[in-house]
Structures are given as structure tokens and as C-alpha cells.
Amino acid sequence: MSPTARWAALRAITASPRFTQTLTEVTIAVALTLHALRALIGWPGSLAVLAGLVALAALSLASQPERVEWQGVLPISLLALVGFMVVSAVWSQYASATVAGIAYTLAFAFLGLYVALVRDTIQIVRAVGTALRFVLGVSLALEVLSGVLIDTPLTFLSIAGNLAQGGPIQGLAGTRNYLAFLAALAALSFWIEYRTRSVPRGLSYASLALAGATILFARSPVSGLVLAAVIAAGLVLVLLRRLREPARGAVQSILLISAVVAAGLVWIFRQQVLALAGATADATIRTSVWADLEKFIGQYPAQGWGWLGAWNDERYPFIVVRDAVGRQPDSALNAYVDVTLQLGFIGLGLLVVAVGLAFVRAWLVATERRSTVHVWPALVLVLLATTGMTESYLLVEGGFMLFVVCALVAARERSWRGRLPKR
Image (cartoon, rainbow, N blue to C red; front, side, top):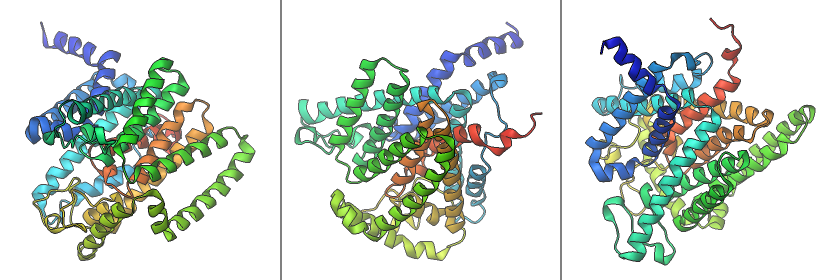
């Protein structure tokens, strides 16, 4: 067989809808459960899997150039943020680790780019739903095995085996907070599937029950506040989508002012809010980490220490950071503090602009388009942004990939460059 014939045969496979769908679902599942993958095959194995996914995604993109529309898709704000991560290698205090961290982050950014380019919004929601049904199902099965059948912790997966006591459970996520985050993302995706009738009703009901049970048994101290923000945003979108165009603008302005006032009140009475949510002890741990990081942020306030992404606990200053009980955290427990430490206030500004513009675009699309599926990117961004107040998922691995996907989907619908003449 000639090289041309081989390429044609390979292209027919990698450009097929079935291959694209399967690769998308596997990519999402792997990106969201890398903790479990590393526990099973270690860092070398998980990096090999990630490299394989990137190679397959690149091959799939090259095989179907006619299906990919680039104009207006790549947000300038997102490119600026990623570009500043790359440039930070110049002044990094841990240059080799920064180069590795940049490559790792770019891999997930590229996978997010692939998913957004080759799948439309409903296909992305279906892929996330399929991946999370598998993740949550396996997580609960492992918790039943550990906590009920053998009554022994699965320490290599960080599963404590507390299901029989009502939780907290960790599943494939490794921590109860991350498992609750995945369950909230799953519940949102399953709800969109239900509203769009893209899966059988019975499967939708079972999936929503699975997500609800996971949230309940995870017993995450911060999940209640995050879910409240997502539900509030969802209810507001339901209201706005039912209004006529002239009234929608006025209501949007009122809601924006109300949201700013509410955010200010929550910040002023944050201790009472945390006590009401039962998260006072958890907040004490987080605020102790943020206080410990202040002196390090102050050393390089403008540009930061250099991009790393997920913390390397063998590098300074990460190795000396401790929380209120003397433990070494694996992140700043806040995406905005984390990015300020690594990229300074310039990086923080770029992140806020990138998230803000993506959210505004996604929100406008959600209020204007008829199909419920267009609500998904806006609410996922709410989930990522609010979770970013207590965790750093927004910046690393699957969380960053989801952010890229939502930003690209929103830009595809609302980017000003999309209205430029096509070449």
C-alpha cells in the first residue's frame, strides 16, 4: 500500500464521527480522573496516556480540516493568559519545573481546543455526561467495595472506606471536595441531557440520582455554597430566557447590580455564611494557607514566581507552605491566590479578564438562544469560578480543559472576530 493510500485509510478512521466521539469521551474521563490514573500507573504512565491523547487529537484535527472553523474561535484574552504562562519561564525561580508545567498545561489546553472544535455544544454535553456516568459509577462501586464489602480503606486510591458511616467518600477523585465538584458538573450535564431529551428518560433519572447520591455522601463543606451559586444562576437564566428582548436588557442591569451587592454582603458576612454552611473549620485551614502565601506573593507581586500549575512539593516556596494544622497543601486552595503566587497580579488580571469575557459571552448566548443546551457553558463557568474561591481546579488538568472548552464555545457564538469577512 502506498503512503498516500495509507494516509487516506488512516484519515478515514480518525476523521470519522465515531472516532471523534470516542476520543472526546476518553479525553474528558482521563482529564478529570488523573489522580486515579497516577495511582494505578504512576506519573510516567499517566504522562504517556496524556501524550497519546494529544497525538490522537492532533491526528484527528489534521484529518478533518474542512470541518474546523478557526475564525473568531480563539479568544484573545485566553491567548494572552496562556502566553503569559509561557513567557514566565524567562523569570521563573524554578525554570525547569516551569517548562514542564507549561508543557503540561498546554497539553490540556490543546485537548480543550480539540473538543471545542470538533464537537458542537450538545455533543460536548453528551460526552461530559457519558464520561461522568462512568466516573461516578466506578467511584460509588469502589466505595461500596471499600466501605461495605471488605471494610478496608483503598489507600492507593485515597479512598478511606467511610460509606457505611455516611461518608465522606472520595471515589476516583481522591478528595471529597473534588468528588463533589465532579458530581456537581455531572448533575448540571445530566439536567441538560434531560431538558434536551438527548438520552432516554430512565437514564436521565438514574444519572441525576447518581450525582445526587455522590454529592450527599461526599459531604464536602464547600459544595453547598457552590451549588447554591450555580442553582441561583440557573434560575436567573430561566427568568431571562422567558423575557422579551426589550425587557431583558433592563432586567440584566438590575441583576448585575444585585449580584455585585450580594457578593459584597457575602464577603462582609463571610464568617456567618461559612458557619451557616458548616464550613468554618475548612475555611480556617484555607485562610491559614492564604496568609502563609502573602509573604511569597509580596516578593514578586507583579510577575510572580513563574508558572507551575499543579504544585511541586519539592520546590521552594511550595515546600515550606503549611496550613493551620501543619499539613503541606497540594495547592493554594484558591485559584486566584494560586495564579497570583505563580504569575503575579498581572496574571491574576489576565485570568479574571479571560474568565469574565468567557462568562459574559456564554451568558448572552444562554439568554438569547432557544435551546437549553446553550445554558451549559455559562453554568459550567459559574461552577469553575465559584469553586475557584476554595480550590485551584480552574488552573489545572481537567478543570483548565473545561475552562478552555467553555471559553471557545462561547467565543464561537459571540466573538466580534466572527463577524469579520472570511478569507
